[in-house]
Image 1: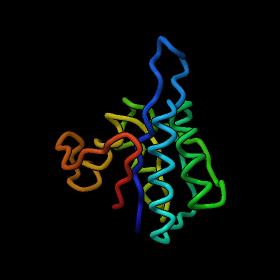
Image 2 (image 1 turned 90 degrees about the vertical axis):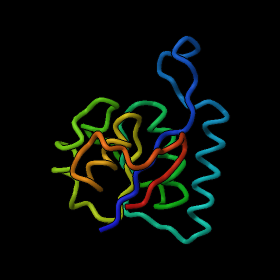
Image 3 (image 1 turned 60 degrees about the vertical axis):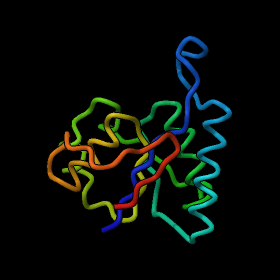
Length: 132
């Protein structure tokens, strides 16, 4: 099974916009990563995001390059949601990209790799993608 964990791109401040959409820099970093993955020949079945604006925008950018725009929202991908609960209901989704936030994405990676969410063996930068 292959799963891709992606962190949304840099967002604008809450003072600038309470919905916190991607900043121009955030759009650029996600577009660069999506282009790199596309040039590597990566294709995913779908891109699933948290529903927060910055994750949705990032998912749309990734999905245009990697799966013909196939995106959806999933409950349980918000920053402080339970990684164990999320992984139990999602672990059979093969070749899927999940787009979310810190600390959730790093805790999910830790849980998948070590069965413990707080070990954090990898860091995921904004716009970054981890393949497991």
